[in-house]
Image (cartoon, rainbow, N blue to C red; front, top):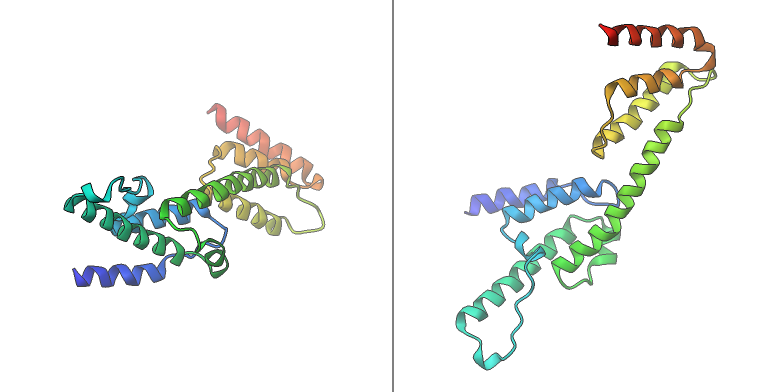
Length: 188
């Protein structure tokens, strides 16, 4: 058990700190960590409240205390995997569920906006004659890498045609020949 906790503790250090980028990836990694620690249930299980303290059973007391302890562990691990600036913003939230929900609400919305911006950037990208085609192709590859990171999928044929369309005007004949080759290959 001690070896397992030690390994887990060393893996926490390796966990990428959330700094407003790649929320979905960070969220999946943290959820995996919380599952390994067996505290992820506090994100979906409400706190056990005592209606009448005189009637609370010993088992009820233990269950409530376990939930409170697991909630604190869960909350602490979420906060410890955040950048210092985000930690300062969110450390006052008292339960793991509230913290998780607030982060999810804010950053999944921002992630959707960034996906729209990324798609728009790719669609509107135009190559120019004043820069080398390879340099500009590298910029397109970088955009496509961001697609993969955000789980955006595009058919390879569409990507190829889009890149051909982005070639500079001076490449007009080459563009026509490439498109013709693609049409011929697709008929085969």
